[in-house]
Length: 259
Ligand code: PLP
Image (tube, rainbow, N blue to C red; front, side, top):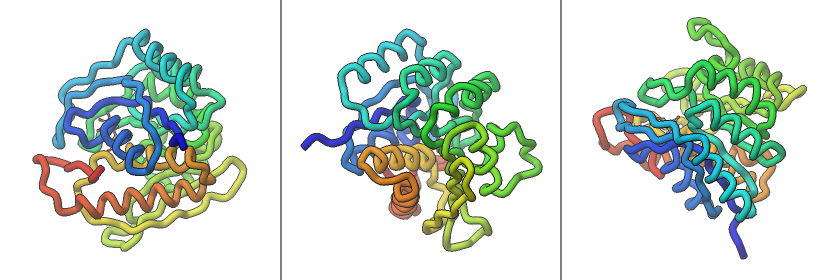
């Protein structure tokens, strides 16, 4: 029997921690076939990003066309898109599909991966056609245009973002340092947000966790799980991967999560 096909539209990380490396490894681990559209190329290691190349729009368009015309894509996941044109192309090609949007605004090392214009395009164009978006608290605040000095509770951030259209999961770390669990907040338009807890893992080897989470979520949706179950299983998957790599000493900075 054929596996479901999941398409990742995202960027590369030369260090192999985040972006398409994490996406394709996750697809493979969860038993779906991964297709990919490369939207951006980054030169990056565990300490930072040294160059970004947005793939020209005609090449992004050609990759989208090739995959979507040929393969039975059950779900799409977007990561770093890198340009306004890529946001517009993905919106046009993927509206009406099961679409998981990971609004990648910043690298784990702190580098900006989206300009203000790209953030505005996410808000105005892409999010309204998404099935679910998966920001962390900082990305959620950025999408809502909030001041980062005055953080809102992640449940309120999730509810606030449903105003832009889709279901929202705000992924989170432990609410108090040293806690044994982390809580993500899932909000659907018009409903109270629900908490999804999973084991906390104390480690700085977390580069790639956002990509791994959103790819796992898209995989479980493609495998036919409902949204809440997919969110819970994706969170458990990431906790397990963090546990595998928690003692690794790869690189001089924020090391990779296990793939
Ligand atoms: N996509 C690319 C290409 C990146 O370089 C990064 C971060 O460095 C991300 C996505 C997001 O990374 P994370 O999964 O650590 O949030």
